[in-house]
Length: 79
View 1: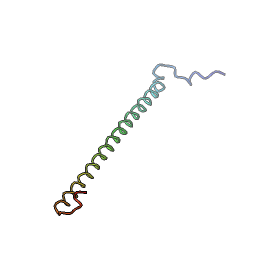
View 2: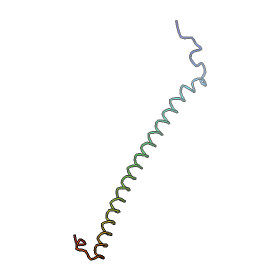
View 3: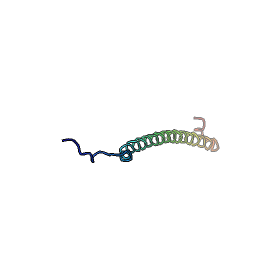
View 4: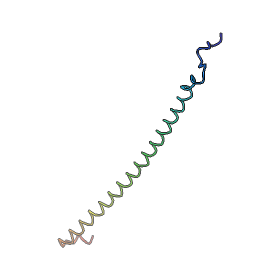
């Protein structure tokens, strides 16, 4: 027994949901991918910046310790 004719869209406008749904889903999936990629790139850049700032902070702390040792006249300033 063949499918009933009213189970399939009969006019062009009836096909809109069937055509539009995959397009909307593809746009959403593409947008989610692009946003996710940008977030990962931003996170990597932030991590690199934070590591650079930590290294600069350690270097400044070492410089301050050296200057303090020099001002106090201790032998550790040279080491």
